Structure formats: C-alpha cells, structure tokens
Image (cartoon, rainbow, N blue to C red; front, side, top):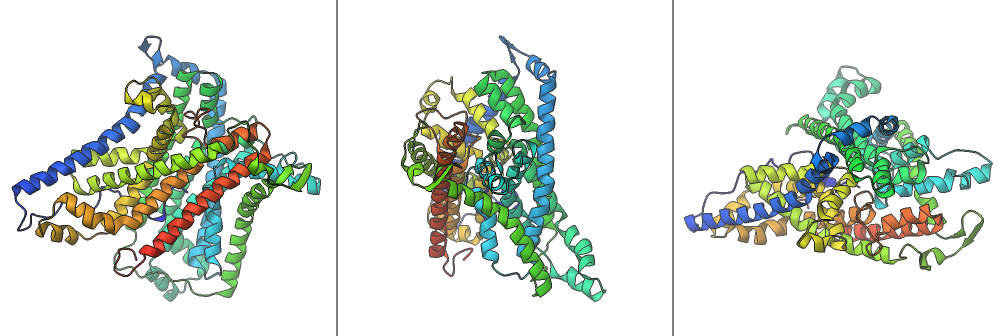
Length: 576
C-alpha cells in the first residue's frame, strides 16, 4: 500500500490558499508579527528535518560514489560501467520492470474497470482482495510462489509438474502481484472521475459499446494509464525482496547494491549502483506526477458523474474477469498462511503451532516486537512532520514553503534501498547526536518516516485544502493567533486524516524491507528482515509464520482506522 486513498490525489501540495486572512479587528501588527514568527519557526524546523534526513544523506551517497583515495573523481563509475556483468544486470532490471509494467497495468485496468464501470456484485470483497499484497512485505509474494511452484511446491508435487519458478518469470510474477494494488488504486481513481456527457453524446450518435470504449473511455484515462505504468515501473525496478527470494541467479540492480555493500564491502561501487538505480526512479516519478495532473485536469466543475447501469451479460463477464485475477492473489497469500501451520514443508504436513512459538536464531518474536515499536514511533513522528510540512506549504508562499514542498516530495522518487544506504554513509561515522541515534530503533523509525514522507505530505495537504479559509478569517477576527487557529480549528477538522496518515506510516513501516536492510543489527532486527533471513536459512515455515503475524498486525491497525473513521463520520465534519 503506497498511501491512503486520499494520497492518490495528484494535485501538488503547493496549490491551495494564500498565506492567510487579513488581520481582524482585534489583531494588530504585533499579533501578525507573532504569526509570521510562528510560521517561520515551524517552517525552518521542518526544513531542517528534511535537510538532515533527506538532502544530506543523498549528497553523501553521491560523494561516496565519486570518492577516489583522498580525492574525488569518476573512477568508480568507469570501473562499474566497464564491467560486462553490470550491463547484464541493468538489462535484467529494465526487462523485468518493463514486463511487470505491461502485465500489471493490463490486469489492473481490467480489474479497476470491473470495479468502476460495471454493476457486478461483491465489489467490496474484490476491493479487499486487491489490497492484500500491501499488508505484507514484498517478498511474501515470492515466498507464496515458492510454496506453490517451487521444487517442493504443492502444485508441482500434486500434479507431477516441473514448473521452474526461480529466475526471470518468478521475479516477474511476484512483482506483478506486489505492484497490482498500487496500479488498481490509481486506475480506480482515474476511471471513477468520469463525465457522463460524452457517453450520452456517443450514444445519441449511434456509437456502440466498443466504439465508446476506444473513442471515449481510453482517451479519458490515458494519463491515468501512463501514471500507473510509470508508478509500477518505479516499484518494480526498485524492489528488493522478491528478487532475493525467487530470483536465483537472475540478479537485478537492487540485489547488486546489497551484494556489493553487504557481501563484498565495496561501498564506493555500491554507491555507484545506487545512483544508477536512482536515475530511472526519478525519471519515472516525474512522468507519473505530470500524467496524474493531466488526468484530473480533464474533469471540470460541470461534469456529470458517470453511474454504471446494470447489464447482466457485461456484469457477468466483468465478475468472471475479476475472479480470475483475484484467485492468484488469494492463492499466494493463502498458501503462506497455510504453510505457517505446517510442521515440515512439504514432508510432514501435520498441523502445528510450533512455527509461532519456537524461538529462532534470528531473534524470534523480538524482531516482531521491534517492528511494532518502530512502526508506532514512525506513525507518531510521521504524522507531526507531515502535518507541519503541509501547513507550512499551505501558508508560506515564500522560499521556505517552496523548498519544503520540493524536498517533501523528493522521497517518493528515492528507492528505499538507496535511502537506507545513504543513511549508513551519512550517520554511521557522524558525531554528536547522530552517533547516538545510529543503530537504534529510533533511527529505523526516522528512516521509515522519510522513506514514505511524500505520501503523508500529499494526504495532509489534500485535507488542508478542503478546509474553507473562512475558518481562518473567523478565528483572526476573534483575535486568535495562528497557533490558536491551528490548535483549536485546523487540527480538529483534519484529525481523521491525520489518524489515517499515522496508520499509513505504521502499516508501511511494518512491511518495509529495502529501506532498513542496511540499518538493522542483531539488536535491532525487524520482522520483515527476519522473514528474509529465515527463508535464506531454509526455515520456510517459520518465515511463513512471521509473514502471517505481520499481516495480522497490519490488518489490526487497519481495523482500528476503520473504527476511528466511523466515530468521526458525523454530520458537519469535512469528508463525513
């Protein structure tokens, strides 16, 4: 799950209201100066956090890539680029990402089309199934495929097949399952924002369903399709967990970074590969944002919402298509849960709870508790920083607001593995407070916060833009300061959104792997990394148990969010 639903809104957080209302009768020059000072202090605090934990680490990782002896140069780039193996790995990454993009976008479009343009039953169930992959670490998709199609997979053994899942097609299949929810969320949004008038006009002109699909539907969502394609490409090319589990000898860029840094201790060469991986991610992110903005510009304030009508034949076809797509998602998640209760896969399929109770060499359940603690810290820190940054961007139209906006959106284009490696270089040898933070759960929480900061910022900004500026004007007229307005008006109005942002940070911190893989130590192990270590050690059923526990914790957090949303869904509240 890349973000809460509202985070998919493509408008820039820099858009919105002006710097604030004019002074009211009880507000003098001194009060305005106090408001400006408060805004400046909040803005500079947020800016300092973004500079320390985003800008500085990225500068350091670049400097590391050009460090040669006691000076700087591009010898490391020359060494990497001159190796034939490197270009083979680049080709692997691009081929996998392109293949995953095509397959995922096609399947996600069919699925989203069934959810938005048909009247098929049980849409709520299919929406839930589509989101299942975001409740677990990415490598769970690969783990499930191994249980199904591996050398000892249940399908291979049951039907006497010899499906070879390791390698290119294994990585592609796992990444398609992992990227599918993000593409569906984006395409559902694009297909939901539709104007009924062009369809009515096409019907009057005698156009049939096929003609309307190609002449009206596809042109209307072309930018949504483009945005989905580049979003999926970015996720696929930066994924680390699935290739580690199911890639075999098929190495991609994310794995090469891990091999260079953790396996061979070649930090300079690892930095070069990290910079190379960063470039296509940055490019894809920019194209995705441009496409998103164009998509929503197609719908005006006079648009008539398109409501699907019942058509038994079409609805049945859409239901069948959605079911066929949902079955593999359910099968992969279901087989992992099933394997977690098996004694010894696949030789002794006796039911057991030992996989949940036995302490393992990889810190046992301590890593799960560490993940919960880190996720709670990330939720708290992330909500405060994202809300503060969104408020600064909305109120400060000067250089501080613009820089906060730019730096706040940058993490969306930075692969998690690159950010984690940058933290190692920037803070491992740092002195002072940073030396105290390194190798702690708090540092892991901070890394997760800034890894997913862009989505939190976009969500909070969207909610702030929905608040009428008349609230600020009324507070100012009554003599309230900017702090008073923020505390007594703004925060209560956006509290449901802030809770949603907190749950988002919690959920993503529970399942992330790439951003923290270089930062963990024996004392700060996290559950997602433990799943990878257990699978690597051959303890697949223990890995399945840890995966199931992670999914249970994330689903519990989501249930709490839904409960809170119901409590806040009262008449008169924004978004109620």
